[in-house]
Length: 293
Image (cartoon, rainbow, N blue to C red; front, side, top):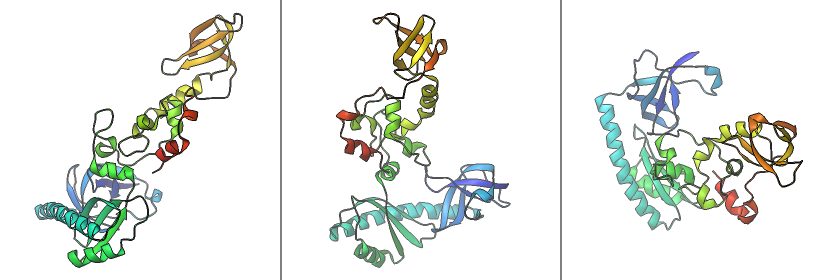
């Protein structure tokens, strides 16, 4: 096992692990490290963590040094320069009539490279733009096309819940979210109700999915034949979170009773079919679009 510290390069970015060697660090400390992009300034978010280095495809790099006051000043100056570069890039995009939306700009710590993040509906030929930017900044230029989820994470905003976007607050990585989750949680399949600001499925659908899957495994499906304290019957509906199923009693066609899941015994389960029947009424393409990255 190797002792490492977790470092972020953006406030809510992915955590990367580095070997602190003999440097004493605490959460919130600034550090200088070497990455595949060059020398970078990062912030310590985790300390005293041990990991198996065999789990990583690449060797764990060491921290170069703890950031000094001069390093911190350089990092702040880079942020100011990035804002200036943003304005210049917007002018160059307009001059080249490119259909792209500039989202963010950042300098590497050593200013050996300037990275421009943008979104676009398709492929963009930005070769001339790179030449124009290189002529202005006289350093390496890198343009990266990002997805709408990454755009929302960088820009921030508010969700339909009224709170700041989860991705811009605490989600280090995006987890896969699917229409299946919305179905299993009996949510409306109206794209406007289950999509976030980014136009993709809301990340929060993932939060309770494990609980729903556990409840679905314990709850008989609609159509299941079950024994109840009042006799045998067929399940016609269920309330997952309450742990209650409605059973139509076989002895009397019109009699329907509610029972706790713990009070019934499944004789023959039925194939699971989601209670939400709105799928056929919704544009399949619109739903498929929500699952894209």
